[in-house]
Length: 493
Ligand code: NAD
Image (cartoon, rainbow, N blue to C red; front, side, top):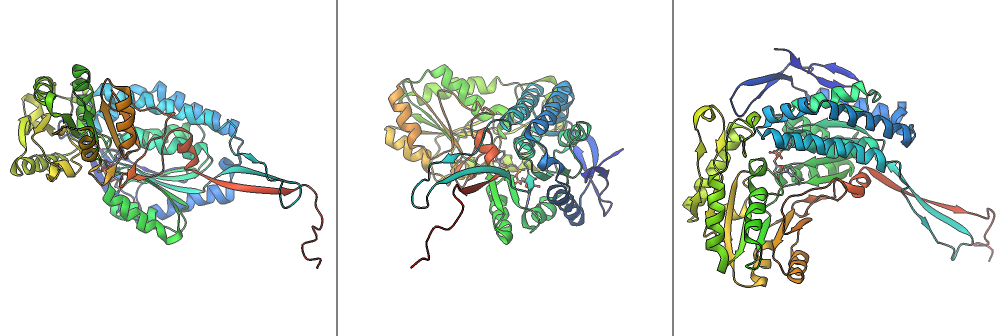
């Protein structure tokens, strides 16, 4: 089997220690590819290449934004042309249904186009400072941060990478990118497109391998100016500690345990469908998943009846055949989710559907879990407190609006949340009170390249997407100009 290589300083190379690891299809257990594993030495070479391109060669950084934007538009066009190939890779590698993988590729194409355009729009500001020092002009310019290390998770293998790569390279940075080892194939293809489209060597480097070694090296290197990470809160904390070594800029997109608050006056069928999108899309392997349904007591039984009926009707199967739900990303992750389900039962939650591995027909070879709903949950249960990252939702009830808000906020996370009601004043009040960065009213999960994405509390620092997502990769320089050079008489006593 041909070994998929690392991309360092414009060359496709094997790891310096000659090690490899395998990528497998979680729906079938079949080995998809053999991947070169980067050593710490390779990570250092990638950082050095990025540094050289940013601080010495400077071709990309100094290129005018029009020309840089044009190359990024070319990348978007190539990705669009080959979108089926990319969707197939994420589908086989990660286990998500094909139509969802296709939607991710479409989003990735638009993300590149968005930042290719945004970089050409005016940024920075002019300030009226004509007081105290005579006639002065003050303005700001945005400059690239320098060398950015970018570390991503496996749940949206291509898209989570593009959310970082598109704005950071658009801003003129050089990057070292490390995807999660379990799903690297679409990112390797993306780097092939970078090369085809003429991204100068050293601007984008790809290293693959264990986070504990090479990810740690990237976060702790004094030669890296910024680290941006999407993944678990635990690893995010470690990255923040490592980054302190040179006070590098840090961007963190971390875990969540998001509340989905449903009032009795909501459109019930709509709330059921969106709740399902909130928790069963991508097999529930979504940071913003609406994993805690918090529902007004008077409609709980009817809601559960409709939710369970629809959840039991969800089709599960080979992701390439476009079922409603595909496979969990790996055997070990499936086992972790099943262990959480067991914990839920032990702690007294009432299992009303799913709760087990799905092994019908061909699925026996893969790692599938049935959509799972737990009723009669309380705040002290592990399944209510901890991120499960699977198709498992808990249901709790409230009687008053304040009780709903308190329950929603009773978590160290603050990534997302939603409210369903036909009363717009109540909707606005409750959303305002929910301490989370991404919120929805009468819907769950729609995400847009133009709008900022990120968490409060232990769900992260900074924002991706939108204008904020570009500014994360920029330093802001203040420039003050004295319009009348000469002495000002300060020391003439
Ligand atoms: P993870 O934290 O295990 O790994 C994420 C990445 O970090 C991988 O590339 C991994 O190799 C690397 N890594 C692991 N240990 C490291 C270390 N010590 N130093 C540096 N890098 C290290 O997360 P995962 O299992 O890949 O993804 C699931 C998690 O990601 C969930 O908690 C989910 O909520 C979160 N997530 C958050 C967002 C968001 O936007 N907030 C989006 C997607 C996923």
